[in-house]
Image (cartoon, rainbow, N blue to C red; front, top):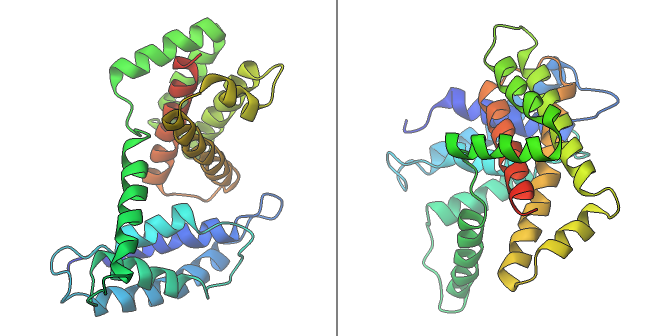
Length: 252
């Protein structure tokens, strides 16, 4: 097999955790596991079926993670009817098994536009130079904020058994404090509208708004799920939030 089934199962668990997330009544481990197994069964069936089409480059794990990030949202609960057809569409786009007509192929132009926008408008990685710049900007806003950013990463890398929840909690609070101070007299939407004017910037702002909403929701989901153990997704969420803070403050 060209894909790791344990990674596929973990991706399916991310889908289940997102659809079941409930701030007031967090789902049990048993319920998450049960739903994850249903998603895995369907995903693995599709993954195996396209092995010949995508030898050694099976994108099934990445496709499931895309769904987990983009379409797996509460309050879907344990509804799985959407998962299989969406995954089939993604896999057909990645590993085509059909010759398109002249008219149907026109869709690819718009897909290309969307992909280019998603890949180029917002950079996720934050290098050391940018981290230092973030601390400078946080100092200008409130000297206490820099310590919270540094503390979040120190906690994440520590041996504390509750490190994932605590690190996430710190970064969530930091993002909220930054937005709160930037928007003392205006709404966040108004603040962004005042800062960006060109068409390109407006498109970027729209993507940024979605990133902020999705990231904050995901961070809160991890924060309130005490048994959440996926270190990679927590690290990614911390980095995305740090990137958002950098973009907001650098534009100030």
